[in-house]
Length: 257
Image (cartoon, rainbow, N blue to C red):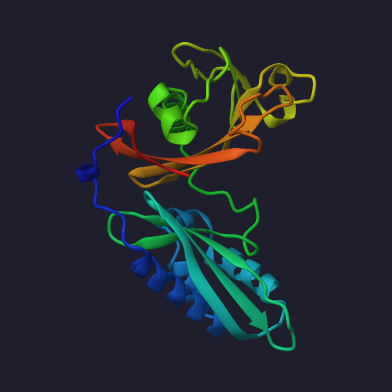
């Protein structure tokens, strides 16, 4: 499965430009400008999550406190995704709090897709189109299971012939066939300690997936089990597959770790 060439989309912006957006976010956070923070999110978030709900979550995080000082920095820029952190200190407190920001570059600018410690897992969005979600997840999974995909994630890794995939949105009629592998799809509830995943050295978990207009992001975890002997996979390794919709089909744009 080919990855789109860099010319197929505008290149991601630099650390400096993401840093400027993160500082803009931090200033709005200090000033308590919840509407401004809300407007920094990708359109899909604002279409599916009301401002009232977001404002309530942010108010809960403030908990009546005011920020006295902050520091922030960009952690990484990887493909179309970026990560930054802000450490605020509230008045009357000595220790820093922590807000981790996930950003997405849509070809024009960086927009927020997640704020840790402010949002919780109930803030699901970008998953309403079940058919598009399934196709995007299938495309991402098939890519990371190819030699090309594995080489970009964990060079030297050999996936087992039976590929166990855990996904919250799996359905009995979902076809996730991967060439060269027998695929066993499980929901998190079906993934118990004596199940199929316990009989393979590594299984895959689709951790998060969102449709963001003509793009999609799919986070895939490589999860080692006690049977694993691959030295470079002692802990869970995550990869984010960025996809782009072209001619009605999802294609891999790039991969971020």
